[in-house]
Picture 1 (cartoon, rainbow, N blue to C red):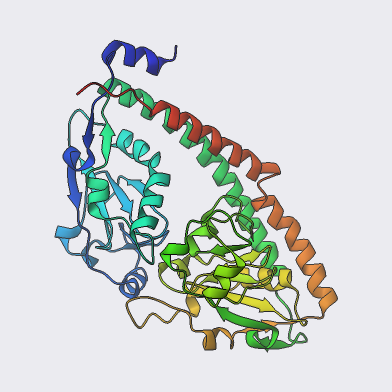
Picture 2: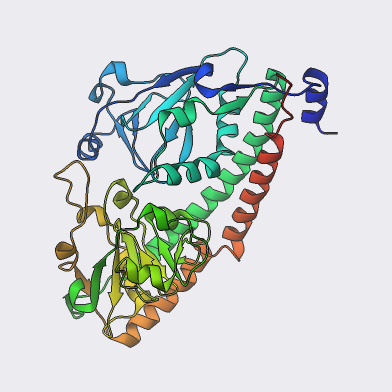
Length: 398
């Protein structure tokens, strides 16, 4: 019997009661701020972190945000749009007003325990967000307010937090080592992609067809069978899609693709986010099979003058944010401007040689079947298994 089992047997032999998340503390509303303003404020870094959708953050000066909108106690931030998730944060922060956060102030509840439990609910909440939103998957405040949280005795909560914290620290150590390798890879990639003036520069539109995506009605999303994957920006975050898109949450038949007017992108197409906060993540991926992608994605279909792998590696050196038009509330990349980007174009033999070298480095930091990425992947799976097991309780009778 584990220490957790012993504590449950001692303090909760008849099961564990649950309570709505909203009843455990305060829900914080955040601040009204645009992506463009966040970008401007971040030019003068400060101690206050501002969270936006996806992975977007900005560290700004204390006085950059109204004092009433700043949260100064440990809290759990709800990432409620697109890729659903939670962030536990202990320093002063705020977030865009379309997000919200919870500060647990019940003396019988450990806030980090609540965070770990919420992480077990992400998959179900992602499905809920996808089912209830026509375009971008999105949660409503009630979806989390009414989410029931099991509340075992505090001794049990703290023991579980201690165990999961240990897993988290071990994972962080592996991630730090992997990040060091990524920086080394980026250094070599920069050298490999630094061509002198003898190599011509050509417009991206001259060596690749720049294609925007297609509308993807909610009624056709979530299908697990079909001839063609239909990718959304959030699919770039799926395990296994670190470089090449090989895992999909949505498929469409040839009949549905025709009905939607989709022009399939061939294998080898390089894709990236073209609108919203996702642009700042700078993610680029390569399609492994003929696929469709939605209208939040842009693709580059290489022609005979450039290899797909060379184009992918060069795009990895390019900052998408430099193309984003953020004059409005939502940053976006225009097809006409992407076509004008200048790309160095050595002959095909040099392209293949450079791409082969960089592919080897890429595998060292992204291939989940070998080396450190494989070890980190195994550690994450082990962590998720024990987390879910530790946070599953027998419910007490009402």
